[in-house]
Image (cartoon, rainbow, N blue to C red; front, side, top):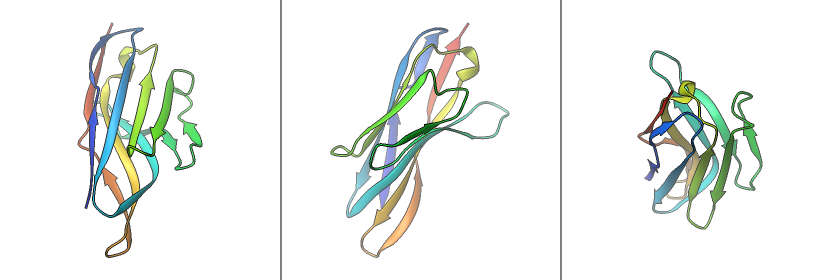
Length: 121
């Protein structure tokens, strides 16, 4: 199985920055695309950013000028650098990975447990 663990969330003042990390672990797998989602209280989960294995990125329009997604394939880790944070960025941030497991061969969508980001005004 493949497991994702996020870290780096916390409380920050408006205008501040945070860097989230998400590490994939397990045996006999390959990580393909990786994404960050977020879910604010009372709202649906929304896609924040995506990065392919080759490093191509895409962002939600409201975040593309402030957030940067990156990855280190040697560490099976994806990052989300968040700058100029706003109170409306307050949410639980989730990492998602599209993984290929070799034995038995199958593709999986794997989610992390989430990390809380709170931005105070």
